[in-house]
Amino acid sequence: MNTNLVYTLEDLLNWPREGYVNLAVIGDPIEHSLSPLMQNAALQQMGEKFANWRYYKFHIKPSELKEAIALFHKKKFRGLNITAPHKVEVLKYLASIQEIAKVMGSVNTLIYMKNGYQGLNTDGIGLEFSIKKELGFSLKGADIILLGAGGASTAVATQCLLADCNKIWVGNRSKERLFDLLSNLSIMGKGKAIGFNFGTIPKDFPKTGIIINTTDVNDKLLLDMNYFSPQMKVFDIIYSPKETALLKKAKELSMECTNGLFMLAAQGAESLYAWTDIKVSPETLWKTLTDFTKNDL
Ligand code: ATR
Image (cartoon, rainbow, N blue to C red):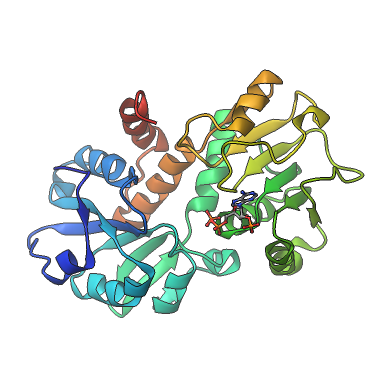
């Protein structure tokens, strides 16, 4: 199948694909999404039982979200992935929400239930798996420097707290969003989450641990990287471009670092497990992505 085709709400209204089990990712924009590529490749490898499963991408605008979720359910889509900007807004239209996703305040995966969709968040698991696999680094007991206080940051911070990290230092351009995030984390974090300004290195700022970028910034440095020890690990959730300014600088300073491509595969494997009850290794999905992106990102 052509995994590049982008469908719309209108296509969904007339969705004709009987005999198939349907899955989809929805977002705005969505053209760039690699999820159909990796998920359809994985489904193909899962044998006869999944031969009629298909994964599509849909361009759904914010104003269409409510109608779209109701329609996907009516058309019995077995599962959905939710990407920007719908991960928070979609919570309003779900029948139930997994506890961790409630704490994270966002979902990226929906599972069909008779009375509506159940929402989960597999981003945090994907992140932790990727950090372990690619950097050999455990979040347990670690100092975390988190760049950004948006939707992705909340999921990452929650996962770090679940993994029992030592402290999370959160830096963000807008103070308002930073304070919102810190106040959301205050119950679970019990003094573990601390805010800082990008312009100033705080006293007691760790020199080792891990820096995780969750901002959209890929072309400039938000921190003076020379402050840190070469033992500092660096993770950027961005995967396109492959090498952000942060990763380039980390390499120059001999820090171990990685982009978000393996996280994309790992969160996808977890979503696939939620829909099919079959564990496909993240490496399988990652292989499809790396083969495809060798020249393209
Ligand atoms: P996501 O769901 O991907 O996290 P988001 O919720 O829109 O997206 O969050 C984007 C993050 O990138 C925010 O932390 C944002 O900072 P602000 O809260 O100050 O907007 C950050 N960001 C985006 N552009 C930025 C820039 N030019 N400089 C610094 N931070 C930026």
